[in-house]
Image 1 (cartoon, rainbow over the protein chains, first blue to last red):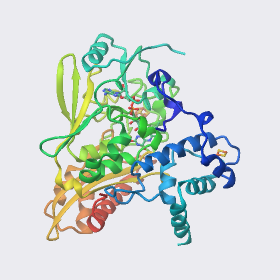
Image 2 (cartoon, rainbow over the protein chains, first blue to last red):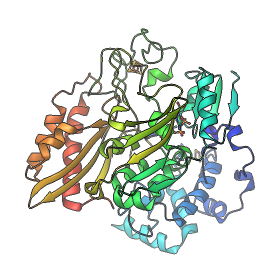
Image 3 (tube, chains in turn red, purple):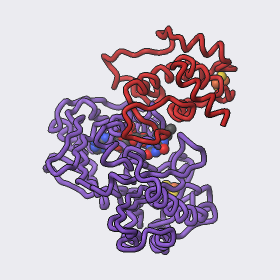
Length: 121
Length: 331
Ligand SMILES: Cc1cc2nc3c(=O)[nH]c(=O)nc-3n(C[C@H](O)[C@H](O)[C@H](O)COP(=O)(O)OP(=O)(O)OC[C@H]3O[C@@H](n4cnc5c(N)ncnc54)[C@H](O)[C@@H]3O)c2cc1C
Ligand code: SF4
Ligand code: FES
């Protein structure tokens, strides 16, 4: 589960398993490089950790504020869904387009084609 | 660096005993507000009693079709719960429109109820603030008060309550269950938060040693057809300027049931009872919606930096009701 380290009182997490970017080996890392998902790199470790948590949440059927029908069983991971679900990670360099593209690639071809269609509209 | 003691009891009796014995103790939920305030020196508890080890994590269906939500349930779990999504979509949407996914994974229901205002001067201990220091004055009045209240404010404080979740809870007639060494009591959400009056530092009816154990929702059939709309300075990860929770039941073109509450406009989640009264029996038209909004906002007052919210609230009420009418609820 993704959380904000900056607001976590460390002692509350005693005995829990914690994964930071140092413990991550994910296709997202390569995808961020391929899609220019960063510039200065300051936000990147957070973006990647957050994206891993986000994909797990989506896989578990968790809705978001961008979800139109809350009662639906599965939510399609559109560009709008990714942006909303990743809104807790700001990139001061403005690499969000690359970040969304990287996540889309990893999330699967379905989402990519849908977002292309969206962008073409 | 200020030191404090930390305890993590695993039963409610021990938790309330600890806090009753220590006037400077505070409960700790997800920590997303309290840890921040402690770091800024605004809150200075000598003892922190972590409530996340307590058995308050259940969401149970009640025999009458309502829901009992443990105070330790994380915001994201509540928003994702099947019955919340289908029976109270305004509540799921309200929670999902608040903060970020990371914060919602941490934040608890109890902590969300008691989160403090985001008025900038409350966080800045160099500024005058009656809420932080009674009698000191209010820097927001002549300063930056874009987020400030337009309903129920007082000369001493114009801060607004920032919660989205609580707006839906107000519309749904939620009841807050609290426990202390003196026993258990139940406080209707409508009367849980207080308007500032002369005592803006007293924000709720909760005593310092009372633990929130649960929130109960009654069965509210009209809520199945409901939505939450939040207007803010950016599309996500920002507090509300104005928000509206609305449910509507329409038969033969007339309103037969309505629930309406507003966020970002007052020191408490604002149940729009006057608007609900105006809607009942009226034709389900744009004109009725506008009239209801105007009735509710007749007593609204703005300052130079937030008077725009009166008109914004009116338009947001109308737009939300219109959307529920034409598109149905968010379920
Ligand atoms: C960057 C940021 C953006 C945010 N944006 C939004 C937003 O858009 N909308 C919104 O609604 N909220 C927003 N929030 C606020 C967030 O929702 C609250 O911080 C959160 O709900 C508080 O829950 P918590 O469990 O972390 O509380 P804590 O920080 O643990 O506690 C908050 C208060 O509640 C008390 N408390 C906690 N549990 C109990 C209990 N069971 N009984 C009695 N007292 C208790 C604590 O003593 C403390 O005073 C935002 C927060 C941040 C940091
Ligand atoms: S509006 Fe309330 S919280 Fe803000 S500075 Fe004035 S007294 Fe303090
Ligand atoms: S890459 Fe610079 S802040 Fe995101």
